[in-house]
Image (cartoon, rainbow, N blue to C red; front, top):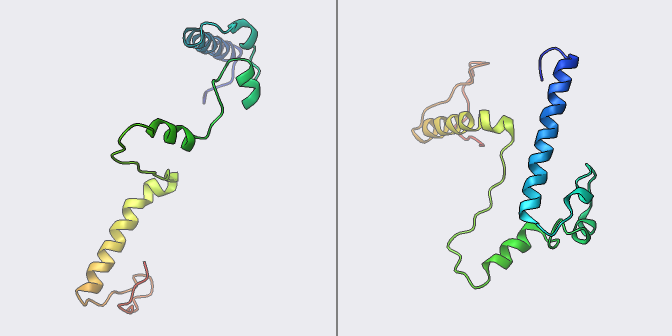
Length: 128
């Protein structure tokens, strides 16, 4: 996709796209055998209630509602929500933690931290 945009490349892309579409149709047909796949596999998209009416989905719910319904009659050991990290945080997160750890260690030990840019002594009170 990053190379030269040629007619041969575009044709190869169309072939792969059609193959992916066929694989998806086969999967849907297997999972919903009563569905007329040719009627719905047109490349169009449908919103919630339309998808229910066409038999593409069973019902409309939020992910929280699905989780809560699955918990009924079961013992929940641990549920933890994790916020997805931004790409920049993935690269700088550990460096930031390491910097805060070093500064906290220096302050706790009574060292006088020095600002590398100005060579000025910093107060031991650090906001992290």
